[in-house]
Image (cartoon, rainbow, N blue to C red; front, side, top):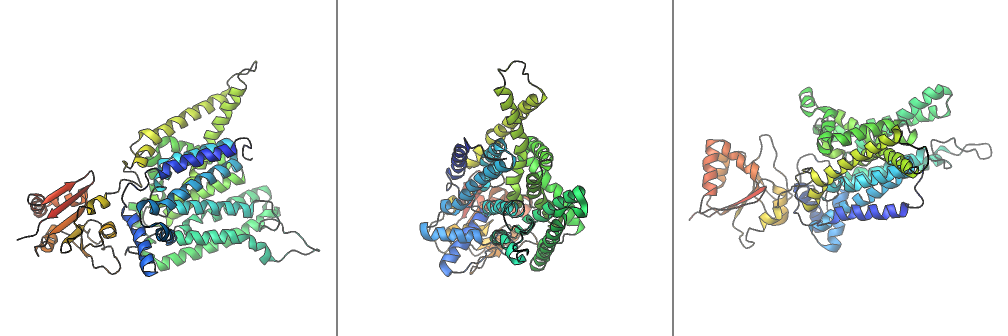
Length: 529
């Protein structure tokens, strides 16, 4: 299959314009959330000291490639929310083009158009393309990794590892020369590794794909089949590399792995991810995804590859990680969109065929045309619901009014702007240390700190944790003017105890000053005289 040679340039231009507009519109309006402030703080530290320092004390999946890109942009254009989020928007738009091009190449032009359009407008992909984190970059690199595997294993080019090596003067070329074709894949995997440790789970698609190829070769001709031995060799090498990578991760960060039975029951394993997708995308998308998975498995090697890239990474992550992290599966979303677009593209082709033959005598709508029309109608309803109607719709994401998976952050910039810049002898208490320190340049306490929780570490800054209202009373005892920032719901938790309720009334009654927003609250507790 190939691109529609008549319209593919127009398809590219329209998809690029649509995806760029949705990701770049009003990009710098919202203030940083905690994770974005974390990346921006690393970039600022790099510019000031020349070294990358991770502020967070807890294990993080974030690598340093995205902060390095952010630091380079800060160095040339200055610090701003728009600049920090620009790489996500840029890589999100590029991923849209790659989804269109390769879905068209593998499954036909209509599947490519549907997949590119869904990825361009879907609220999850738009949301991750509008925040300054690594997810869009990792998704882009993962698409390139899968494409490099396809080019390496399946394209009929001279000397690729899975092909029968050509003989020169009766001899096969050196094995090392044939393995030069692995260099693009290895370089992309290395870049993805510097983006996030989740790359190790992403690479599980390769053993899965080789296992499917091995099964197909076995049923086709068992050991006699020419591809069986080569598929088996690469499968064993892939499993060995994956095993070494997992052992290295367990050694470097054992707290993230090796879940016990209690934690496994709480996390829910891979079922947690399926429940998350159903909750975020709805039953229609899940139905198209399941139907597209079945259709892809019947399409041969392109379908097997897309199936492996969409499903094997999050199955591996659900089995290995002790904690359910559905947001971290975003890098597989381009291939899930391709799977969901396969039945929609098939329906579009059936309807187009019926419409083109409408005037021909004796041509009636058969079951294919009717099924295609139903699929198109359901897909239109799904798109309208997710783009305009639902609580976390794309329109809400673009305007910043949504509390979807990647939006709804507190207005830390607006809260910290309330503090007079000249007041140096004040006490700063926040529910989150990183964004307050980024915008204000200082923070003294974190409240409330959960039992067993750890205070966020900021290099060169001493931040103490307050776990109870009684400890907060002690922190207020020195009589200095105190500013308390944070999430309204978290600060309101102190009212559940009698001591906390009394303290809340003291903090919020005059002469204290209180500013409230939809999600945030700022309290200025005056200096005692």
